[in-house]
Image 1 (cartoon, rainbow, N blue to C red):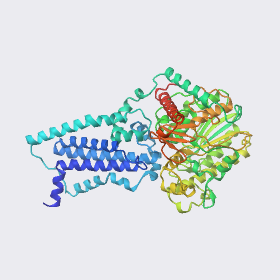
Image 2: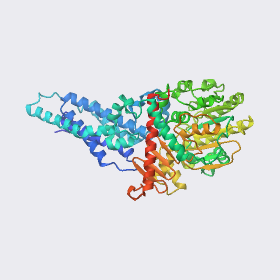
Image 3: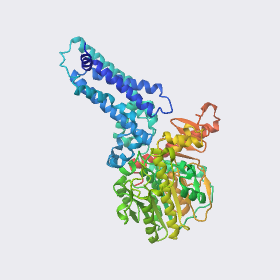
Image 4: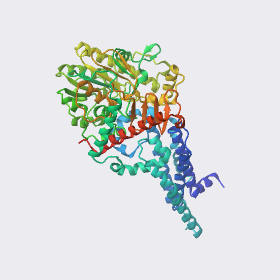
Length: 627
């Protein structure tokens, strides 16, 4: 029999369905290998569940008539491949998988597309390679539908048995995995490991329909009761201040500077003999330096702003701004307005981007300054007003404000893809990245160097305007800038720390640069974990403001742990990740049986506090419980 006839015979038989099942199984394990199994083996539970889902799919496809079976198989193959591809790409971008709830972010597709150079990989073509082959075989008329004769009784009985087997497997195993996907967890990696990627997506879809029923608190009274109990506990346990500086900033102006993608590892680091961030280094050396500031989620710029302003955790990437923007919060601007501060927010993009026009239009602001409110738009980098132009014009506006004022300014020139496209004077990048030139990592370092140059311009202009000495300045990076396991990044980090562990890499991913200038205070280095939720209570503490609702605690309290919105816990000594506690110093998993009772109790307390914070935060957002 000719090869063409053999191929066509397989195409028109049950073997084609089995082939599709095998291909999907291979693609699924390709996804696992490049995501949840990068540094941890795939668990037997995940393997068994994935195989069962594929078997169920093959059983149901097998009982369909020939033409419908072929079309349905190809459609399912393409759909699942597209989903796995999207999950893979998104995982590289945010170390998480996609959710149907994020459909609200499609409006930012053009801007998000700028990150594609970072997340696209040649091996991702494997998700669609079989489809390319099928199209080629079809165009070459090697495969075509054949009209099948009416099924015999034996064939019908076989289909019934196959269908019943599929139902039985789904009932016994599949439903169990789908239910595991519904586990009340903010950790998607854990959901995938326990429910498989298919169980996760099925559960994610059903959960999206009942999201309000999934929350811990349905009304304000029950939420506030637990919130006050938690805050009272924190006040008792962590209330002692490291530095007695309450009210130090009363009636003084405050500038908050959010730097795009500036991770902590670039601070005080050199490449080919030159500092990457010389201006930021000097600022930190003269003021309060936070070496363990963490972003609050694997997230976006909008999420950093949300947590800074509200002191609650963001929903999934950008959703707090795109979906829940009509909510009411005890926001940063509100508490400063109550003390008659002149409040403003500034960003060099248009109001539609991340819905900022609507979001900040609802906050208690005296002035909202977006791109169209600036006069000089002559230099734009990757579509945003260049940091230098943004800062120079911001200083001119601050000079006209009544004192005291609070201003939140968000820089964007060092945004992905880090090409600095539109920068008119390339000499403002002063480093030579050497072997990293024209790589994604090299571009990142150059973008950080430019962002630092512009920050230097800001500091100099503030000094010349007479605004620097008596003004508090808080500066921090908004989120990660590179994939956790970027090869050039690991090469760069291990050069200075050859004993770097996987936990070091995970912590490096979430740690951002942070410094705080408080007038008349000398250099202090604070190494305890902090995050964006701590900013609002810190400013309230320093400015003697009434802060009625914040999940963070002020920087100068003794609280020794922070959380991320995907159930990560970072303490001074330990790190919690995917249901395991790690020793930060060694990177090793802690053996619970070898821990003393006091340590076991402490770790359990960290976990329970984390769950309480996340439950309160999600409930507040989803039900708008602060309205």
